[in-house]
Length: 136
Image 1 (tube, rainbow, N blue to C red):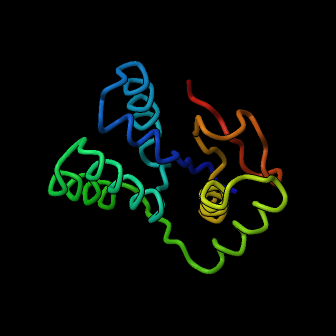
Image 2: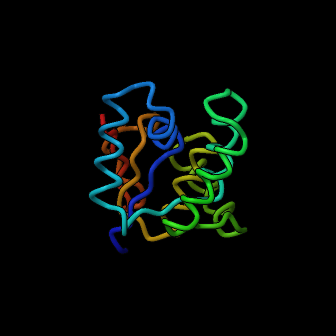
């Protein structure tokens, strides 16, 4: 297991909408201090695009630019069959929603040691490999 770090979608939303300054600052700090370790998934990219563009936080053109920047800056973990199978196992074992289970599976297969999320159980250790932390 390496020390890669995964940020849940809502944290990226705080970063780009800047409508909650304290949360924006905390996420910006995490990214600045861990930029070489950050992993982002194709699922999070899709969710981020949807929220930024559909909820009118930004134009589609600006949302595409944001996603392009993320793709060019951080390691992107694609969702494949292995992630889906592991997500189903996590869903059964830990009772997270399928979508949260997919984030956990992607982070596990991406060799992350931490998932930052405010939507999952704070300080939970998954499969003795990855810890979920609420950064707030």
